[in-house]
Length: 121
Image (cartoon, rainbow, N blue to C red; front, side, top):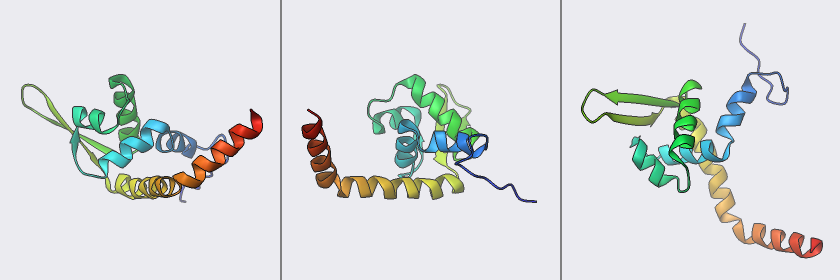
């Protein structure tokens, strides 16, 4: 019998996936990896403002959920590559679609924010 997920149920294990994919850093890391395989330092530069600790935690969570593959090359110094899995590519395309929508609608979003702030201030 297949697992039936309901992200609106607070007890559903799918919530942990939502927490990673829809998080600030998780979505940005997924979006950056859609460009292709990246090393840790390259990812950190691609996702401006993320700390080493947060990037490491985010990558571990994405790997645990089957969205990112981590490959360690046996060389000195260590060389680690991060790549999206097929599921990771699929969700990253969805995230990129959302990012594109946000970027394409920033004028309207900014106007709404300004109107909201002015009405409250």
